Structures are given as structure tokens and as C-alpha cells.
Amino acid sequence: MIRTKTSGKKTQILFVTSVCSVFILVFILNKLYPLFADDWFYSFVYNDKYIRVGSLFDIFDSQYNHYFVWGGRSIVHAIDQLLLMMDFPVICVLNSFAFVIFIYVLYKITNRDNKVNPFVFILFSLLIWFSQPAFFETVIWKTGSVNYLWGGAIVFLFMYPYYKYYRSGKSSGNLFKVVLFFLCGVVAGWTNENMAIALIFFIVLLLFKSHSQKMAIPKWAIAGLAGTLTGAAFLLLAPGNYARLEEVKTTYGWHDITFLKALWIGIKNILRYFFHYIMPLLGIYVLLLCVYNRYPRNAESIKINVRSSILFITTGFIALGAMIGSLIFPERSLFGIIVLFLIPIGIIYANIDFSQAYFRYLNTGVMVIFLLLFLNGYYKATRDLYGVNTVFAERELYIEEQKNKGIDSVVFTKAMPVINEKKYFIRDLTNDPNGLTNKAYARYHGLKSVNLVVNKKEEN
Image (tube, rainbow, N blue to C red; front, top):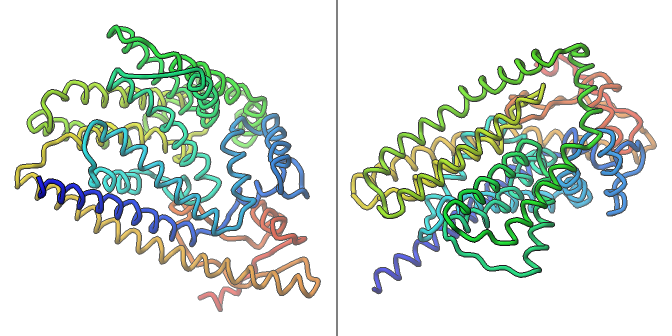
């Protein structure tokens, strides 16, 4: 008994250590990654060139304009503008907390009905790092993070009570819970287009399964679904969505695009991403499933765990299929979709019996290899971002010097270090003061213009 208690305490200490370590590592990346592009843009009231966001009223005014001009993601963009009102270190802390909360929610889903397992938490932290093709764009870049990381956290937090009810069949509720779930459903459904559709499917499927198993459907679950449908309607029917679509058509020369051609573009995008990103995850899932069927931690839970994993896989396909209606499918849009395919891997992994020595050593060995690969990639990322951060910090000081002299048109002569722009989603200013990036940077710093003129001989 004493040995069991000691072992349990060590496990809890390891879990807390893992959580703190993940927070610190992500915070360092956040601190090194400067505000960039849309961060500068959303620091101002949308559709107003001069009013900087400084109050909740400004955010409401901004999102009202945004809703009718550009898009319906009012919830996440309101959070973004709220963050951008704060000091940069505070933004970094909050964004790091958001990542830890996100991982913890995934951990709670996958490790449901099991004891504390730090390996599952560590596994998910690593999986997000390795599996996301736009990690820095969706987790570290502040505006991108709010759209995908924060939005994903909201969606999966809302999923969890439904999943918990499905697993246990137990629920309690009152009028307050009904109202709360309706309001939270509105928020969850109003976050991200393809994830809103996936969330609705997930809830409807769970309620259908529960009803077919003669389980009483709680009133809060119905209210939550009604709220999700309401939020999704506000999101998908925003006039700004259609205004943005017309701009996309203009940019790509798709004015006369037919329905069949648009459908074919969507299908090609989905197939390309499926084979490149989703199929390898399904391969890992099948491999773990074979191991799990032979070495389950609890034989009585096999059926519910397999069903649960298939539930998330099915929801993942719905989220992926929802993108067929989008002419543009950037890799960042895969964030929530990939997570839906990672959860089944986590569910099966968390329920494999690793008590046998060779299995335990194999598990530890694989985890160590993943950690070493991560540390190598993390070192390179911090090295690259440190160089970027140094240049941006020097520019901040130079701008203050120039403004104190009354100069409002600033010329920089030192370029940002050469980095992988696609990986980090950050690029330098240009020698065109009328370029979008230059203009946004100048407005953010209260300047008339900025320009980057680099002496090629000195640079070499």
C-alpha cells in the first residue's frame, strides 16, 4: 500500500513537471516570436485607419465592421484584439497557458477513466509539434494562435462534457446548466467554420448513439446543441464571408468559375492533404490498435475505447470534408482536423498495457527518441527566432530614436536573418514602403512610412 502511494505521488510530480516544462518551452517560443502582420492590423479598429483598439467598445465596433466586410469569426477575433491591447509579455503568458490548457483537454479526453498518466500528456505535446504542418502559424503567431489554438481549445472543451456523458451515461443538470450550455454552445459554434460543422456532427452523433442505447438525453445537451447551431449560423452566414469570397475570386481570376470546377478544386485539396497528413496518422492508429487488441489495460473497456476512437475519426473526416466548399485551403486550416485524428491515437495509446518489461522499455525508448528529435528541432527554432527577435528589437529602439527627432519616415538597413518563411510564417519588410507589410508596420508604430534598404555587399 505504501509503495502504491509513493508511486502515485511520483507520477503526479512527473505530471506537474511535464505541464510546467511544456509551459516554459512554449513561453520561450512566444517571447521570441514578435508581433507580425495581422497582429499589427488587428491592433486597430477594423475598417478604420487611425483608431487603435483601446477598449471593449472599440472591439465591439471593430468586430461589427469585420462581420459585414471580411468574415464571421467574431469570437476569436474579439479575443485577438483583447490580447493585442495588453503588454507583449502578458500576451505571451496567456498564449502559453492556452496551449497547456489545450493539451490538457486532449489529455482528459484520451485518458478518460484512467489514472494520471504523464506519458499521455507528453505524447500529445510532441504530437502537436510533429504533426502540425503550420505549428508556428497556428500556435505561436498570436493572431493565428487565437484563430486555431484558442478556437480549438474552446471547441474541444465544449466537446468534453458530451464525451464524458457518452462514456459514463451519467449526468446531472439544472436550469443554470441548461442556460450555460446554450451560451457556451453559441461561443463554440462561432469559432471556426469546419470545426463548427464537425462539432455539430459530433454532438448529434453522440446524442443519437445515447438515444439508441436507451440513455436519457440531458436537457443541457439539447441546449448546447441549440447554442452550437445558433453560433454556427452567425459564423457561416456572416455577410463578410461572401465579400471575402469575391475578393478571393478576383485575386485568383476565378470570376467565372463553375460549380463543378470549384468542387474539383476542393476535392483535389482534400485528397492532397489526406494522403500527406491524415493517412500516416491512420497508419499509426491501426498499428496501435493491433497492439491494443492483444495487450489491453482493461479488457472490459476495449469496445468503448474503440468506439470512442472511431467516433473522433469519423468527426475528423467530416471536418476534412467540410473544406470541400473552400476554394482556398491553407495548411493552417488542418489544425483542428489533424487533432481529431490524433485523439484516436491517444485513446488507444493510453489504454495499452505497458506492464510487461519489454513493452515498457519499447515505450520509453520511442518516447526518448521523440524527445531527442523534438529538442533538436526546438533548438533550431529558438536559434532562428532569436535572430529574428534581435533585429525586431533593434528596430523598435531605432524607431523611438527617430520619432524623438521628429522623423516619421524610417529606413532600416539591417535585414532579418534568412529563415524558413513557410515554417515560421514570418517574413521581413521590403524596399517598397507601399507594400502591405510595410504599411501595416508603419501604422502600428505611428510612422508615415518604413523602408528596408540593404547594402548587398555588406550583407554578404
